[in-house]
Image (tube, rainbow, N blue to C red):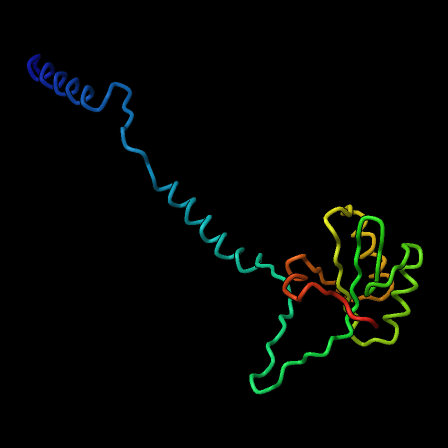
Length: 162
């Protein structure tokens, strides 16, 4: 090989290496591993999502049939009302120590063991939870919460006499 051929090859190699970069690194990102990882994550989420669905079982009240007359008689519901210094069951005062026995007496003969709790905003949360815990121990199976707006919609009276 003569000197001209060597210089020409050397010049071509220099031009080629200057074009690519002296380190030989490429300017493009290899996205194939990234796509592989994304596909694996997509498959994992597709498999796990149906297994992770959780929900609450609720029983919604059904509206009465349209041809049936409305029931205007007061239902025999139990309402536990908690105010700053007093606890009442259907507007009858009761103390915290005798609350458990009083609720047992009310619910022992009932098939519907549902009670409603109405607490004023001044009552501490712990006291409301304590009363609901006592009610559970006395045999109450379902506890509903009555808000002030519900009382207003009902005409301002809550709780019937047992």
